[in-house]
Length: 570
Image 1 (cartoon, rainbow, N blue to C red):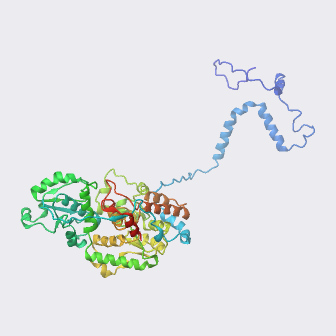
Image 2 (cartoon, helix red, strand yellow):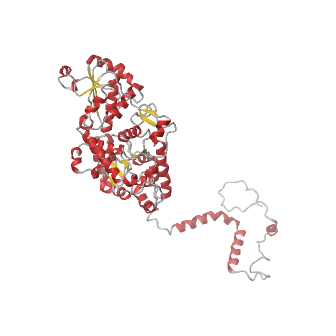
Image 3 (tube, one colour):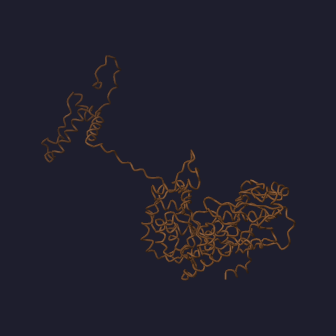
């Protein structure tokens, strides 16, 4: 028997459907007799023993099941019934307001440090578990023994000069310092006489200072007298050839990071011909990978010959003494922090903080003022979140404070802050001062009369900061640049090869500051690991392309023997 076809005929002959499978024996007899299925003995309303106790719900369920079993085709319409029911239900829901989908901002795109600070502050202030960080921070020693400074000076006279070299040093204080030391090395290698370098006036630093305003010129000349001739002016008979104007002197446009061989093969022949040459600009115009004779002259210039002028040195050393007096409870030890959160640095970084529209307006104006059109070129894309995650954003004062507290420095620690004018200082400095009330700057330590001669000269002010940072027990760098790189090298030169410098992992910090669920214990563990890593990296030897001004070992320093190591330790 074929299944009953419920579909109307379309007028076409269709093949017969296959036979239905045999039903179970339980129902087969009733179908053969062409009778409807009637559950007799098991009917819930039958008057058999046990049937009278069924509830109405049981009877309705059994009735529905009976209908479904009799009309199996109803299962074909079950999906339609289900969909109809859902549509009826959805019709009762209002769609006037659509569902709100909250997109989570990409990591680093939002400055969350203030929220994290508020969360960690109670536990931070209640934590008294750390030992005094100032007395326990530097544990690592160089496995091969200590180092000592060993810059050798020549004792004999110099041969006749091949001519005069005049360089223009551009940039800020320490970029100019690079130019000076490289100029000494080039002049000595070419057996030339070096004219005291001229400092190029820069639109950012806006400092008209001359060499003698920042450095002790006489000391510089006398220290180098047996290695390189240095003069403050070119002889009159030569200047007459150039109408007494050094801008008329032939200028070499030397490529950045040129080798010393280039100067020997290209610059020296022209020097012998002209007797006076000019190289401008001169910053970074000599490769760090150079022979020992060149490196020795660099070391001699940087660590021996360059000494700040007497007024700057006197004030700087006075501020060092005042910091040590204030921190007498810590054995005269203090922390110095180089904070780069000036307006021009924040603008140049293209990072976004929490200043809103006013901050955006200020930064746009600062970029146009300092780097006209550089940041608005067609096709240039600025992604602040990616910049932060890449560790390129300057640390804010709040972030520096959180980091140092996590590293174990308590709120009684004396901190010297080396910085220019902090952007929106009233707002951004408040949490740092709350965490470290003993924070001081040169403006706090010195009187107005003492600072008056340097107020409008950024390089001279930076020289004062350099001196105070040089003699701190701990130096903290937060942004990189020439200032911390020179300081790390100078501190290695003074402290037996160890830089005693905290160099934070800013990529890791960006992720930690972006996590609002981070607890104090976890944050502190990360900071202590970062502190320990800085200690282990205190001793580092210079690799071929590293800066000799950051890594003076082994070119400017010698390994101490065991006797010297023991005596220096005591």
